[in-house]
Length: 308
Image (cartoon, rainbow, N blue to C red; front, side, top):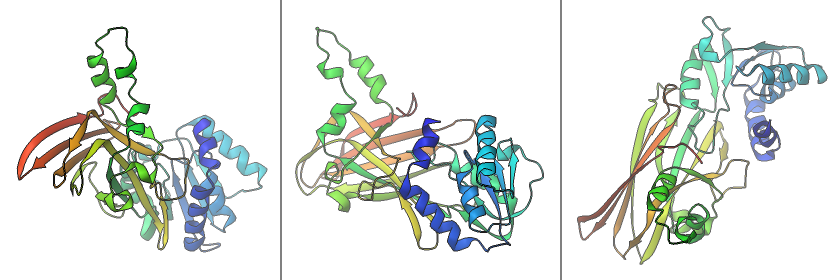
């Protein structure tokens, strides 16, 4: 319930989805499928806004039962509760809108591409998907504070060589609260590395490559990753360090050792994400440092041990 408590306590998240549903739902006519419904809060909002019927797909039976209880307490009677992952449903009811708020700190960690791609078979012709699209952003982290928070290995002492433990621990992505000043060039340093249109058959294995040319000498400790979703036309939800705080935080992709870069150096990151159901989530990132048109360093990292 800790996650559900964070979700329901997130005013920015709740307001954004409410605004999107209000813009789309036609009272007395719109039917909704909620993929990964959790407590059912979004379906209950849709019902309050006039949805004709809401179908809640949730494989956690305890959560689904809780959503039944909440619906009864709010005298909502037009919800249907299906105790399965939506992908297991063979002949779903066709609806006007599917909604899937299966987003994590790393956007794809709850398999939103796979959930929505399968969920599109629930849609009537011309149906609407919430969210409609998603962008992933990345920026170099130049704040030592962020690195120090996840790196006790250099400070343990007692004459122990813990370099192998350090490498194993840092070869992951970490949830981190970033500040704008933690990033190279602040907002100007943010670059989009991936864009997903949920109306298309987007691939589960995807990647992107971006570069920065340094205008001064600096130290890079890793990279920050975050996402922005378009829920409905004109309505977005972002977990950018430059946006109001939500319950989601940013992802920190650390380097094993900080990277010292000179003015006019080029730094490149290439990211590859695999969110297939059989994988869960795997993110690989490779960093290249170019100086005077030659490759000076190449560093390969991956989420061998999951999100920390």
